[in-house]
Image (cartoon, rainbow, N blue to C red; front, top):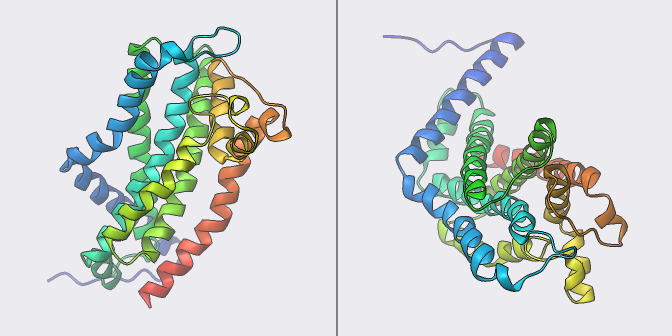
Length: 273
């Protein structure tokens, strides 16, 4: 019968934490691989939006400068998919708690950080896969990145940075909620965060107060910065926020991380003890 070896030195504890985090990441990915309906469901709305807004409503929408609307639209849909991933993270965390899976992991001799790191790692990998599918779909409908390879990779990195910050928002909310039913109630509250932005039309075309809210939305900074890096049409507003999308696309996620990472860790430690 094998015995449990408890690492005593700092390097040994770090190696054990990394190993446990990889195991938890793999566990979450295996769960999704056996539930393809969840992945299809998560991608359904952005893919339908490409067809609906790109072909049905797109003919009635114009971008200043007579630019191609689908080239304007796709970066917005990439950003929207990163925001909708918040629902996935919340649902996964609260479901594991509701089924007692998290309690079982907490009782096992694994690194205490592995559960949270595993969740953030697996959700980031899934977000990368979602982006690959959406970019492929974008190519099929005529969208192109006109930036250099490095600019294109930087744009993808900004999208994943926003998603990574929202993962920790989702982990915290998932640890606070009492049941999976509570997570479904949050969806209508997350929808405005994804829609009241520069996703489909420039904020300048909205009523004054709504355009101000849309420009201040962190997702708008990420979308505007990616449009710039992809070399796609962009309609910068006159506010300071609208004219500095690139630094804000980095700053907003870091602010979210600075707030929600410690909150999630604190909430997890309270649940563990």
